[in-house]
Image 1 (spheres, helix red, strand yellow):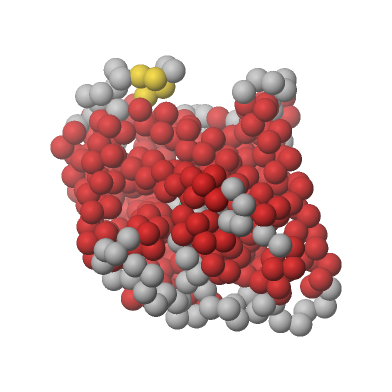
Image 2 (cartoon, protein in one colour):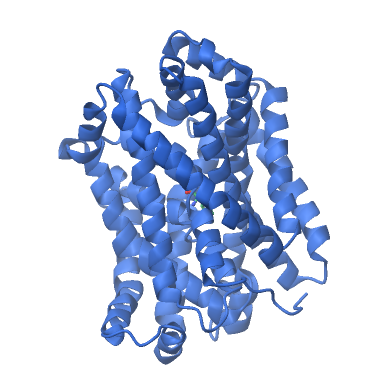
Length: 455
Ligand code: PFF
């Protein structure tokens, strides 16, 4: 229903909410383990290049498109694609689909982190005597359908509740409350990690590159993760941008969001690798890194149970502010395309997300035998969305803003709210070229390499 659109209380509210979307499991759970699997510092450097050459320009383009249209993704394309409308509406549909896929499995891992808050309080984590104990316990939990589905349910419910209250009273309020708490906990964990004896090896792992481990697949992973971590390429930031007023500065807000996200990923990496190395554990543990290895680290440290509680609360907060952003994109798409009320749409979408997430949730236990291309259902969802659908979505945004909109229109929209900073025309011209040429070409090349054309 195209009723009057809600707006953020102010620009800071938008930055916090968008940073809340960007900062998530991607920063604390995924970034450390893919860095661990891909050889440490060399991966971090490629990832940073992907963020700043491709991720940030496309992020700004996506927010700009939303602010321009003041609509959700599908309706934006329906209204503003001058040519090839069917194609672009389908592209909006692809964003919606990507959101459904990501949210369904994202809630599963979010549920684990909420479950581990309970494990920390109940004293289970403090009782581990070795990393073997921690791994066995984790495996037992994630293969128990009851445990996994109930925490997944709690998470879907929490996200649904926030989005039910809308943009200003739900999403913005929760971001203002939780993001500062999040940051304080993270800084405490970093100080703790660095103060551990033997933490220097963790620092070296993050700062000293070993290029021998780098392949095309490393670059694909880095690029996919750049989109994933910034929440770019599926219309979430377009939706958040559509709640911006015309006098907000899209360019600087975009840069702030990316800087916050990158800073937090690096800090999370610091907190995790210093403690993992201090205890002599394996950094290339894979998706189980923060659930298999960290609890054992906490159990063997003085004050570990408090830090364990802090860490899993951190993870849960990060996950919640991201899940609500994806849910909001789905809800806003449906609201703009139908006559339904927000409340009904939130309830229906949340129920659908819970059901869609069940196969991923069970793929660690009861349904672990169900495999596609040698991967579990969960892994297929993750690979498909992060490595293929998000870069593809980013490519679509870049092509739409760079090639389909009129250059004048794009520049006017970007400069609105920009202020009078010196050199702004040059900065915006560079940005435009990155969106128009660099981003599509780089994303395309990485895709070619992924399907084996470029070796
Ligand atoms: N950026 C989030 C993270 O790093 O965990 C995940 C995410 C949220 C991806 C929203 C995509 C999205 F649209």
